[in-house]
View 1 (spheres, protein in one colour):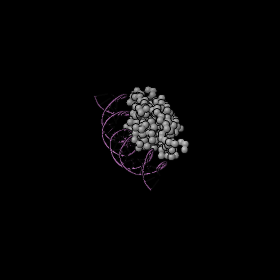
View 2 (cartoon, chains in turn blue, orange, cyan, yellow):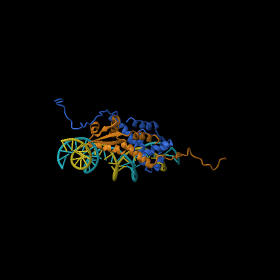
View 3 (cartoon, chains in turn orange, blue, brown, red):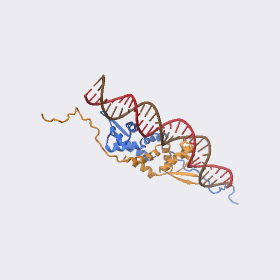
View 4 (cartoon, protein in one colour):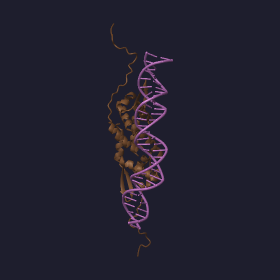
Length: 115
Length: 115
DNA sequence: AGATCGAATCGATAGACGTCAATATGAAAT
DNA sequence: ATTTCATATTGACGTCTATCGATTCGATCT
C-alpha cells in the first residue's frame, strides 16, 4: 500500500488566514492623525472652516449669527480648530480674526491617501 | 471756517466687519461630511483601514490580535466602517472578509479640498 | 438533528463631547 | 480709573462613544 501515514483531509483544510501583512501605520501615528481628524469631524467646525476659507479671513463677531450657535459655543469650536493647527488667530483691537492654514488642510487630505 | 457739519471721528471708525461672504457648504452637506469623517477619526479604525488596505483583504478573525482589542470591539468598529462605506464585507464560509473602497477614501480627501 | 466555531448583538460602564447661561478676562475709549 | 464691549473660561447637563463580558446568530461539518 503506497502513501501510508499521510493525513486525509475531508474536503478542504479550511485555511484561515493567508495574509500576514505588517501595518504601515503605527499606533502613535494613528492616534495623532485621529486627533486632527476629530477636530475637523464636526458639522459646525466644517462650516466654520468653509466660511473662513471663503472669506479669506473672518471676525469672530460674525460667526455666532452665521452658525446659529451661542458665542461660547463658537469660541469653543474656534479653540479646537486653532489647537489642531487648522486656523490661525490674530487679535486686532478688541476683535479676533481667523484665517485657515491651507497647507494643514492639504496635509490632512494627503495623510488619508496612504492609510 | 470751511467744512462745517462734517462729523469728526476721533481716530478710526472701528468698523466691523467687512466680508459678508456666503458659505459654499450647506448645513446638510456639513452634517453628512462630518459623519463620514467621524467614522474615520478613530485610531483603531484608522489602523483597521491601514491593515486591510495593505493586505488587500483581511479576515476578521485576525484583527482582534493585530489591534489588541476584543472581538466585540473589533466587530463594532468594522460595522461603523462598513456603514460609512469605507469597507466592503464578504462572507466566505464561516469567515468574514473585508476590503477597503479606495474611491471612497479618495473622495474623502477630495471633499476636504474645497471646504 | 446536533455539535462546533466565527462573528454579531446585547447590556453595562466609564469617559468624552456639544451646548449654553453665567462669569471672567482683556483691550480700547472716555 | 472707569466704562464698554468682544472674546474666553467655567460649570453644568444631556448625549454620544469605546470598551468588554455574556449571549445569540449563522454557517459548516459530523
